[in-house]
Amino acid sequence: MTSDILLETRGVTQRFGGLVANSDVSISIRRGEILGLIGPNGAGKSTLFAAISGARVPTSGSILFEGVDITRMPAAERCRLGIARTFQVPRSFDSMSVAENVMIGAFVRNANATRARAAALEVLDYVGLDGRADATAGQLTPPEKRRLEVARAIATEPKLLLLDEVLTGLTPSEARLGMDLVRKVRARGITVVMVEHVMEIVMQLVDRAIVLNLGKLLAEGSPADIVRNEDVITAYLGDRHRAA
Ligand SMILES: Nc1ncnc2c1ncn2[C@@H]1O[C@H](COP(=O)(O)OP(=O)(O)OP(=O)(O)O)[C@@H](O)[C@H]1O
Image (cartoon, rainbow, N blue to C red):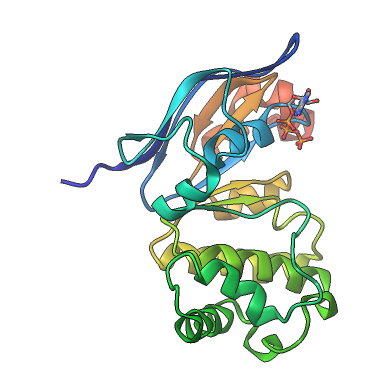
């Protein structure tokens, strides 16, 4: 039987000298959900992303993906297992075409260039960038570049997609299109974890949210529960979220 839990962190701690960026963080990511990872600046969200994606091995604790201990596994191997991420600042190869950028992801599953290109074009169609396949990535607008990041990640055929502030800094209409895309990604069967600061987006989009503060797990629950949680209001949301 397939477990409901796709990924689990157990007591993950990350120290940078005397600073504890993640302190004994144990969370579960459920298969098929859109999970929001929120909290104030410096709470440890990016650090936890780095531990899950393989960018950094935590000081202590472990990470299990589908029951397999991946704590020390290199990022490329995690990608083959089905973990993909986007970066806060898009990392495209600007002199290459949009299709070629996505092919980089598709090569993880298709060694053959013709098949990788076909897979890349399918993903570009899916994310709404099909008209831009032959443009260079450098010609894309900032919101299109975010889409390209998502496309390259999806082309690796992940089970888990980590989105690092992909919807931050967009206009309201761009953010709405971005939210539609995240929902489409989940509809494709991909579990999504997103770091996001804009609470309006978090509230509308996620099934569940996990709140970090000062490196520790502060709260977890449905968006409705989270915005009513006194500890979360005090540490992160502020008084405007307190019921009158
Ligand atoms: N490579 C590093 N070396 C030293 N300290 C670091 C390093 N990376 C992060 N930190 C520190 O760890 C703490 C947690 O940072 P992190 O970037 O994980 O927080 P965050 O919740 O993602 O913040 P933000 O919302 O501002 O992106 C911060 O105090 C940060 O300065």
